Image (tube, rainbow, N blue to C red; front, side, top):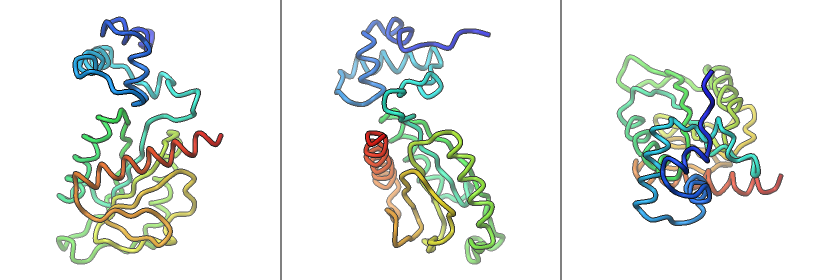
Length: 196
């Protein structure tokens, strides 16, 4: 089995220091556009997976965000995921996606009842949490109230296209919503991981 590439391998290929690669991965210091391009090219060429490589052992953060969608085939959800992917890549996050496939046959007029899907929703949440995500984004449909749907969420959470009286909710604006969701998880996970 071939050896997993390390941060040192990325630095050597990019012709930068390991400190620069670390700054890039952690987003803690602004690097020149040229340095960022070289690091990103090296990461892509080596297929470097910072989460698998355990780059955040010191903080406990994985820089990964779990996203659970009610219906991936929805054009609205597609737009949100497109924005999330762009924003997460720029901030060195990994997106882990689960689709609940809560589809209907009436073009969105009669969305499936969430209470009847509660077990499926929580099972998919646990699968995401098993990947040690730093935070969780739930992308609903129809701006429904989802209080009482989740058994327990031990990580920072943001609800999009859904309502909750207890959690951060983002109403639709795909690009800005994606940025706000990622930043919210980043802030919350940083606080959570620094308290350990």
